[in-house]
Length: 174
Image 1 (cartoon, rainbow, N blue to C red):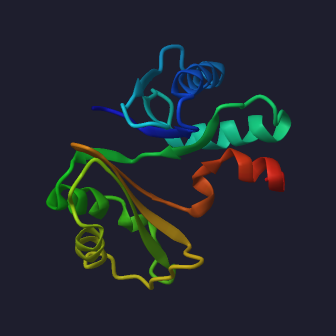
Image 2: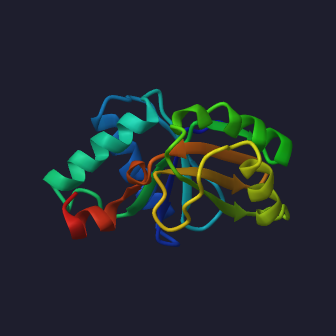
């Protein structure tokens, strides 16, 4: 499975969210994004030719300008890399992106698991060993995000505001 965005929606609204995401990506410049229903309620993945972090910026702008434009998508998460779900591949993928975190900046590891028996604590321990930065679980400067979807895992190293939360944007206006 190849994807560079994850989108969440309410359970049962995957079809509507899929259409909405397709239209959004189309509007901001991708004529043929690939939207995939994962078989997990409330979860879609997408592969777009657009840079995923730019997608977040553009969709944030759309939500701020027209809060009613997005009705089904709850969150959009940019993904740096997709690997097979095993700890060694996850650690290797994370290692490619940790340079983004300046030495004095803090981080947190977040693991979202779906359809796997891997231990979250084992994943966190293995990944934390390769990141020599201060940990801050409450207000980290960076998030090492590990999104496990069965056999595949999306990995991202991003700032908290690079995860698009539609409801939060509408509530706060940012």
